[in-house]
Image (cartoon, rainbow, N blue to C red; front, side, top):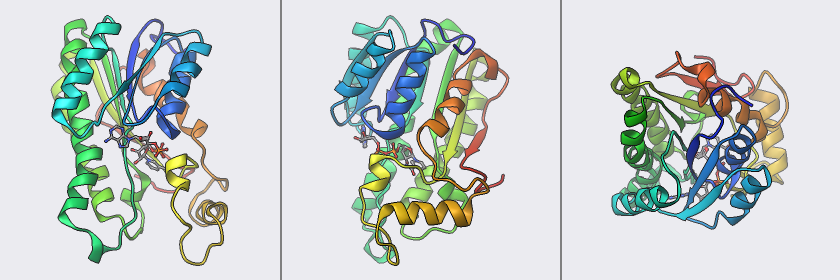
Length: 256
Ligand SMILES: NC(=O)c1ccc[n+]([C@@H]2O[C@H](COP(=O)([O-])OP(=O)(O)OC[C@H]3O[C@@H](n4cnc5c(N)ncnc54)[C@H](O)[C@@H]3O)[C@@H](O)[C@H]2O)c1
């Protein structure tokens, strides 16, 4: 169990799938109760958290909607006494050629990834301030330091998250609240494998292996379990003096 986790409560967005689900399971194993927030059905995540012996509940919410986030926060407070930890994992990453990036698509991606991170963080900052302890972990992406195409709104949103992380850390440091981000590389999740492989690759497995072999120091495909330790650390007491930082967890793909 990580130091300081026992009986804490975490809100994890995007918790129905991929990284969010893996973080929910890991924090539950660390002794944390979980509010699993997602547009989709997070019942499987709730089951996994309960199997680890912790309390869990699912909350359907579109994190890009201010009204939906306000309603979700009220529902969370009916079930959990307080919120100590927020992990902002809900995100979308459609690959769109530049000439097809409409303003509506731009708004949808920035709205989900960046506005959602802002709205959910702000909804629970008062709880953390009141207790003088809090942890916020945001999801950026190694794409912000790599040559990728078709991701102009996505990379913009993910570097916006780095800026938000830094600025919010400055605001909340005096209140015992840390704010950090992690930058995964290309990671095997339902979201990342749901699109067709890029030209030149027969399957997504081939594309993933190529990225790992050519761009990472550690030459294997990243999985959600490669990231859970970082989230556990950044939400624990052990990281109490680390804030405003962005941690690359990508097999050595990006150095900063
Ligand atoms: N998988 C990767 O290669 C990778 C790499 C770098 C960063 N990331 C980031 O990690 C996060 C999780 O990605 P993943 O790979 O687990 O994807 P995923 O698609 O498997 O899971 C994302 C979850 O977010 C939810 N979601 C999407 N829009 C939402 C909204 N408006 N409101 C609430 N929930 C919403 C989805 O329903 C889904 O359950 C994202 O922010 C993504 O940008 C992923």
